[in-house]
Structures are given as structure tokens and as C-alpha cells.
Image 1 (cartoon, rainbow, N blue to C red):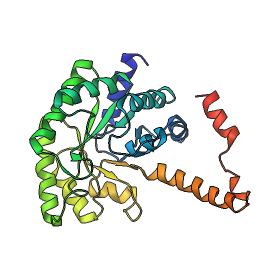
Image 2 (cartoon, rainbow, N blue to C red; image 1 turned 60 degrees about the vertical axis):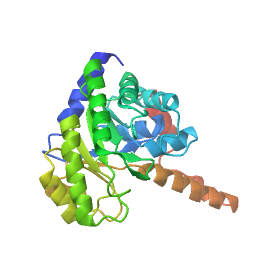
Image 3 (cartoon, rainbow, N blue to C red; image 1 turned 120 degrees about the vertical axis):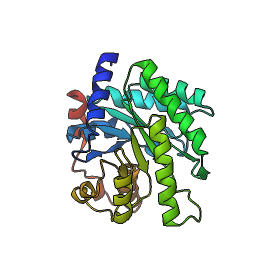
Image 4 (tube, helix red, strand yellow; image 1 turned 90 degrees about the vertical axis):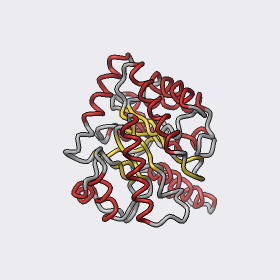
Length: 277
């Protein structure tokens, strides 16, 4: 993909965050899933770091080597005309300068957006100033590349918040959101938030699009829009759903039953997707 095409896709992706309607993003983990989601006429595609890592043979949490992740991104970008936002975990770098280099690399792989998380290996929260410097470095890298990527700042207060109360988590999320937006983030992603009242409060008090992760029991898309949500992504849910279906079929296969090998979307369907991308 040439750089001008990438810039156009990044601008289109940015325009989808205008908050006039909810942007729904399926998270792909390989070229096959990206092609399936493209055929279903989504506006854009995101990746799931967990799904990508598992497909490459690693655990989630920046365990997959950066070079292999970038190759996976290149394959996904190659098979879809849609903007692709990459779950880039903590930025693949120990310092802001290293994060900037990694962001330049993922832009070169074709990304039009990235997620950057402020959790450290799902164990604790990064110092807020350090997290902000990493976002600023990512923004500077994007400016240098000339690609206006959307930076989705993931705030991990709900998944690594320890014994903090809900009120404390909300306050800390709002504090971090303000700092991250000032550093160059475009969108805020409080992973793990599910209670409608909390979602509504965050959306009302964060002066930017808010991304919520889809999960069972969450209000539907229309209701999330009423709450103020601008973007919904599926995180690892579609990847685990697909792997779960394969595991269940394989379990029955071990029992000598073959009926579960029938697929509603089969070989010829997948061939068609790749013959006519």
C-alpha cells in the first residue's frame, strides 16, 4: 500500500470517530479473519493483541516478537481495503524513544490507528507521566511519518486497579484521560468498564471519543450510543469464540463423531474471499 492510500484510510478512520454514531470494530487476528470481517461490510477493522499472539504461538502481553507482529499486521492490511487499527499493547519499547521507533514501524506496516495501554503486563499501572510521554512519542512518530493515525489510549484502572473502589477507579481514569489527551491521544479506552452508569459518567466527562470493549451482558449498541459511547471493539472475544468452536468440534472428533465438521461458511466461501479480495 502506498503512503497516500494509507493517509486517506487514516483520515477516513479518524472521521469515523466524530461521535455522531457508534463505530463498531471487530478485532481480527490473522488475514483470514480480516477477510471475513471485510466481507461483512464493517467500516474498519482492529486487531487483537491476544489473538495475534496466539496465532503466532505466543502468550499475550508483548510476548510475541515485534517483527512477527508487524508481519502479521502487513498480512492483514494486504487483504482488506478498510482502515486497520493495531492493538500495539504498551508500544513495544522500554522508553518513549523506543516506542516512537516501534510506532514508525507499525505505520510502515500499514496501520491507520493504534492502541497504547498504560498497564504493565496486566500487573500494575504505569506511572502517568511515563505513560503520557510514550503517547507523545507515538504522536510525534506519526507526525514524522505524515500519517494521522488515531491513538486509542487504553486506561487499565479496571483490570489492574487492585483494591481501589469504583469511585477511585473513575477518578483515576478521568485524571489519566485528561493527561493522555493532552499528550496526543485521540480516543480513551477504559478496558473492563461494563456498568451503564459508569460508562455514562465517563463519556460525559471525557472530552473525546470513548471506546468500550464488547462483552456478554453489556447493553446493546443502540443503548451504548445513548450513553455516549463512540466506539466499541471486541478485544479477544471473536478470537476466543472461534478457537472455542474449533476446540469443541475437536473434542467431539476425539469421540469418533464427524457431524461437527460441517461449516456454514466453508472451503469454497473462504476461497472466494481470497480469489476476489
